Length: 132
Image 1 (cartoon, rainbow, N blue to C red):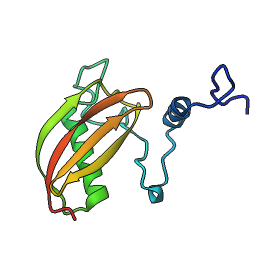
Image 2: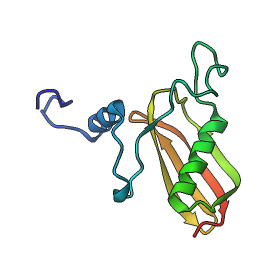
Image 3: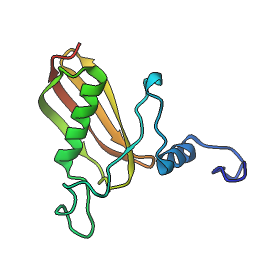
Image 4: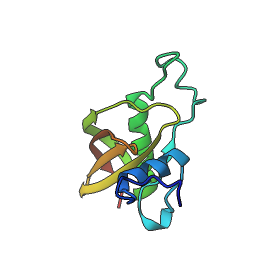
């Protein structure tokens, strides 16, 4: 298909396909175990007062999205006990596609990565309780 993003050699790269998926908001099927692409709506009530005219998703709200993703993946009884590490590497803008990857590294610890099609947005570690 001529509209697919190909490089000079005519190949489709993983990066160009990820960007295409993110741009069109295509969600990954939940059955495959991969994180799905999501977007923060421009109309969310937390945005208008967070840098008016040039809103960004607040870091604390980004962490709450990570917590929600952990509950969805590991069970609703999961409780967040702490965030010993969180690095915010770039900002997330309303409408920008992102996904959250979670990895259990110990019984009570999860590592998270929040990324867009172009770059890592945030990463860190959660201490949790109550997840199987």
